[in-house]
Image: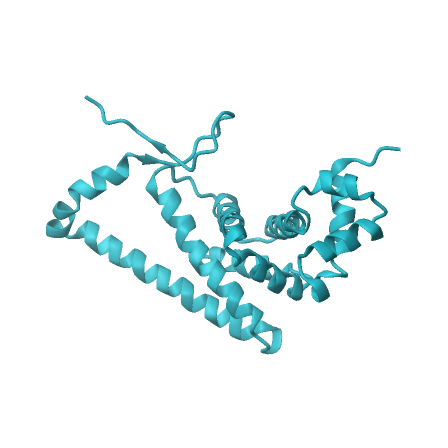
Length: 232
């Protein structure tokens, strides 16, 4: 009987979770997970060509999926937009069932050879948050929103990993302060736009930034964005 790919991968990930606290997202963990899931080494490698790295990525994406499910069940309608973003980041951390697995993942993706994977995962989490909250920007703001939230999210995760306060109250206070910092930047940007002098100085840079567009969902490209050619 052939086991479906997603079912086998889920079984591998579940089996790995018992070993990650001791051996991290390592080859030792991957081999133990394959044995525990009763998968041959060749089948396990076919499912996860990079071994435990692919399992660590799957673990993060499972957290994103759990966050989106929780967000879908949460009434955010009465919240200010900044509070919705704060709630989403908090939910993303609250759905984590194994803090040590996140700690080990942070160590893994801090390695130079996996840093790009880690950055992509953080970006994906923040993109999921903005998209779920209804972001419709299609210009450079699409990038700045996700880049800014990526900084907030990653710094909050690092703080959360070392937080031993009751119910992680110190982490939520830290998160509130980071969001407040972001809002201060947005207020400065608004003042620049409203200033006759500063707005004229920014005419050129604003035109240039206006040519940057959000990624388009096309099957033949995985580029992060697009450039709009200037009209004659």
